[in-house]
Image (cartoon, rainbow, N blue to C red; front, side, top):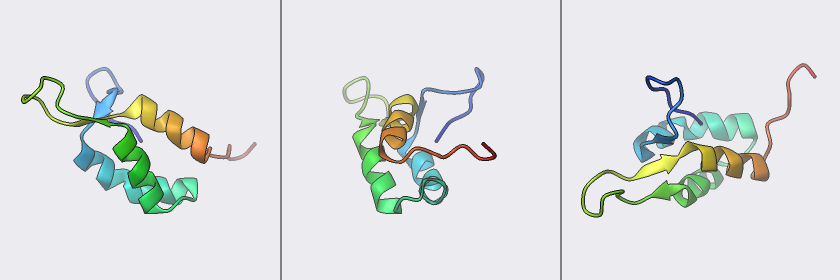
Length: 77
């Protein structure tokens, strides 16, 4: 999963954006969508400023969890 911002990659994405990417990630990783959703939930933080801010998915942590669970095989190697 990944998010794109001004710097190229954002370290966090919204849970809604992660949900949009779940079917693609599950397909590419050979995982169930439910398994991907569980990892997304594990990598989602609450509101960063107490009652302010929005929940966010840490993309770095999520990608590491996906790699530990089901690495993507190198294509063409």
